[in-house]
Image: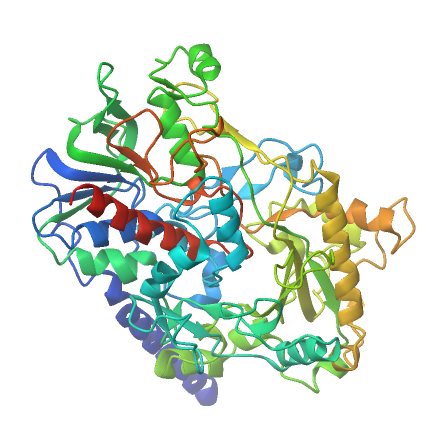
Length: 607
């Protein structure tokens, strides 16, 4: 009994110490009292709708001029959720108070294993937005992504013109960064994963066996295998709230109001100029509007930015008329051109007798006492890094040696599909597919590979459901409506099959978790894999495109190359919704770049 008591006492001490260290780590979110920058008046030079990934950047850069005032209106709360700083636990934030918890309309061609065929759409609803809840992987994309934007009418957005803004973001901590391509004095750290399991090392070796190089995918060439580059330093997530907004709030000219839900942008019907913002507080009580002396900057994200435009009278005239909203500017492209990166999960089970010869799985290490102590005392170990340890960028269409069409993420975690909070998968549907009940059997161990479609041809839309700004719009992603997207993902699966049979990964003797799949198609046939792809379609939360940037000749453009809403004065959109076509990788880096460039353009316009 004394030994048991001593053991319990030791465990309690560890728990208390861990809690104290966690609180210390969280103090970086509350260094500045939240009430310090509460609005003191009703007029500001700039009003930014959304304190998320882009809005935080814009607020920081515009407030560098002490002669202007900046108000940030954030629908969510402050970024004080205790899990936000922990790199390894980002999935635990999905479905919480810091997530908008959107779900899509039922899909006809995809997400067939999800509840009611509806995809869950996590999106950050807190300061820092999705940069406070995402997987922290930093990918700038390919230089041809931005050159294609310019060719499509977005003048000034070629790679050479946006590269300085990427470099301005970065405090690059990877080994031997190319100074021509990386920044080292920015507010957002870019580091390699501090922990790489033995299994992830085997993934990198398997790439070499197939003839691919180890690359810095944010450097000269993107095709190849790499450790993931992440926005983490000293074991702590760096959102744009931490890197940009919190330092800006030390200035006397920055004001932040959380739990402020925008009702509409006030637009003068005679001059078609945005003059302010009408909003509600957290209890849905309408407050006196804020007035913008210079501009309103809409940074509410891919769903709420087009939603806010439409309820403000800017959008497709037929839609606005149907909901008896004023038509101040007919812009057919508002809510259209919706794009997203989607993935399919390939789980490989590995026998314990083999797995025990290597580093145990990342998920198991995370739950160990040693890992907890490493994190809280040394800012290291599995808890200080992200589950996606390594990545590959590939072109399997053989149409380019430079631009990838697939990304493959590797994780040494194997989690039953229905336990992923951001998937929306149905337990019953997954059980029918895989042939075992995840909640009644001990889950196996192994690893997971995720082929990701980088350049989907399918396009969706965001539609009004009611005229009430508090009612979420309807999201129609229309995943896999273009058959070529299925073909590309199938090529990704075939590549993974080659990868796991290399000498490096083959020694694990991993077994695909679909050997008992209940399909009418022959296992491993192309028809079988299309059946699988259409059922396990899963968002990477890289939504983009619903307020497309383009030239005046583009009938679907919503903003011009300076991000001004076409036909409306004093109003810009600055977030992922302006992206014309998705970049080749996770989009947070692109969104930060867009915000940096937008801030410069705004400053230029006001001398």
